[in-house]
Length: 150
Length: 428
Image 1: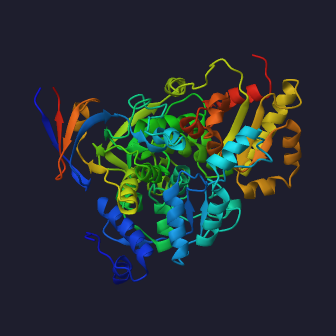
Image 2: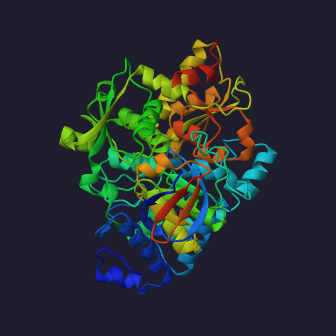
Image 3: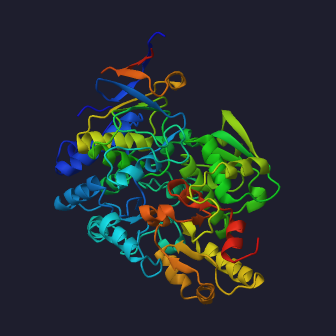
């Protein structure tokens, strides 16, 4: 199958190639990250019982593809904390416009923790319809996202 | 730093460091946030704040470090703030030795230190800890049109929807930065155009829907949308009062935690719906009908995370968000009368009700408190969610009628009547 390219808005830039982890429902940041973070685990394993796409899966280092985030307003700070612990996904790719909690987390991580986590939003519904967990994704500095599938 | 917002000369000066590096960094964060959402300017906030971070979890190192930077720079908050509930109350929420070690040494080892930081920066008073800061007793009630820098999803959705104030679903840290700077970027729910409804929810149930299940169903369906709810006023009335405010508190909390609802309108009841009616509904709004079967299906979708799904509950939490005075009285009467009906004198499952420190203080002066004490129920002002974050509690069969608590912990959700039957020992 041919590569498929999508274009989004760059919030935090960077270049990386990595493995996709996809959630079709909103990412509940607190519910997803809290269990591993509280245990001071070496990697984040999704702990949101309501999200079968991520539940029990390793999130650290993955390219997390999501519509947006939902849930508690501790969300942004949890994301910042996870970035400060270097347990974050390597990139967050939002199909929709980023929500205020995720945006806060991304900014707090960048400006207060010098995090290198990439964040791109507005990739479109088609992106989330197409990308599958396990796909290889290449991200370019200008917000180009290439989904490579063998 | 490059930015698109139009800043005032004062704001530019702060951004450039006129008030020090920490203030500059806070302004930089807020301006960047505003730019992401196309804010044209910063706007003054007009009421006290509410912050979501009340817990001294050592994990949140960035929070304590930032607080210390703020204190070291001699900065205090322009607007005072309330905060979410404290995590620990050993007097009313008994813990075994191991639990205490986990709570005091591991989970919330920085609680005392963090509370000192909060006091130095601008906590309204030493007991200003409740998720329901908008209760009359907590004295943090914005008026319609007020611009807020609040976090805590249940408080934000209440302030927007029931009080008609204007607040985005701010994250922890951003809430505090707004209070300190006295300004927030103007975007999202601060603007008229984003307060219109993109969902119409038609309630067609045979009886008053349980607030926590209805809120959950709405949140799951609309995500971060703005629902306009029709047909609910038939069950909860057309004039805001203490009873339906409590209902809306619980419904909103569930919609905000099971989805990301920051604002809802209830036809004929909430301020903007009363003022503008169906003018609030966007032309392209989607419609969802919620009937008895829909609510039942929503309830049945909740996973049960107990190790033994048939276990008898060992602990029950009522009050997330914190109970209002009216709810506290109602639950007390219900438990008391059902215990008599079921031939019991005290609850058959350890039960804890949570409310704000100010309501607890007022309640303890009434005869209802003696009645509650007689049932064996304990009253506390902790956050049950923080209590249940203790990894040791994951193994225990704990129940609740709060959908927020269910979402973030391993507690099992029971509808209120079923929960009442269990704690008052009704034979199956």
